[in-house]
Image (cartoon, rainbow, N blue to C red; front, side):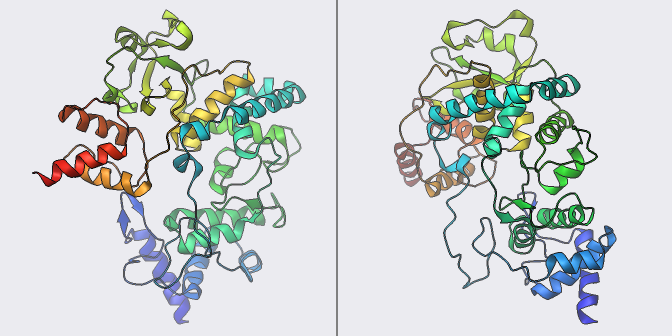
Length: 426
């Protein structure tokens, strides 16, 4: 009875928004988690309250959660004092690999070749998907290739265990709680069996890696067999990905982006989507396509922004709103660049003119220190997360400009030493 009352109170508190928030994101599902984390049995009682409200039966709830244990070695958890992971999480590839490592030419070439084979096999279905949704078949194939290597990569985690772990122990527990409930609903409705319901640590399932909420928002039955089968039907999975792109704002007949050449003396602080402007304005600043090609004047009014993944050292890209749609699939810039470039390579294009820098990233803690120092100077207002994105590079460029340094918008050991020295003399 006490547990039941706790569950009801817990559910009410959760819906009232009485949760600790950091950077706009709920740190944990438990309302007022700073006070104490509820015991798992109490938390489970609260979960049942919401499950029942969602139409999940007690039979489904008990059957699917029976005997499920927490995976304390999973990434992105908030563990109690004294609790240690069995292994160290190495981090998301998009943020721990250099651009050159992530966009490895050999891997892109291999996937492009395989993508053309898949295109030939499903040519009619892909043409129909492209006509209906307006998303190029090469883009959808690139998503398929990046997510599961065209189905050859088999995710092995039990989806319910993965989501249960994140919902109870994860940094984004509120988000994963809802995904867990939707996963139970998917099983109850018979879309997939528990044995076949495998996912990533974050609950992404199927050939194109949909989380449960993606399934309910975007999944379609494209092969006409009466099922929305994102797990084993290639037409269903690819059409569902295309629908997700459309629902997220994909613009028909528009490019995702292009590699460009920068003019001498280009101000690297103009990088980022907050500097979106028509292509004609970028051309007026001296930007043009790689390999000496020129922009078609038809595209002059298309909005675009500059991305400098390695500051002024490496390849530079001019990106459209469609690139931002790809990022809604995975927010990392490198992920979206991989998909865009793989799409071009599937079409027999995609060669990158400028070489990636060979140097390694500075360490995560060094990036954190730079972000903290830049924030104190009023140059940086984004998350302190140790990740080198456009906002971090932008702030670095502003620092370099204000201190008479060559502005390359790139973090380095030398730059951090300069920040420390400057701070010590103030």
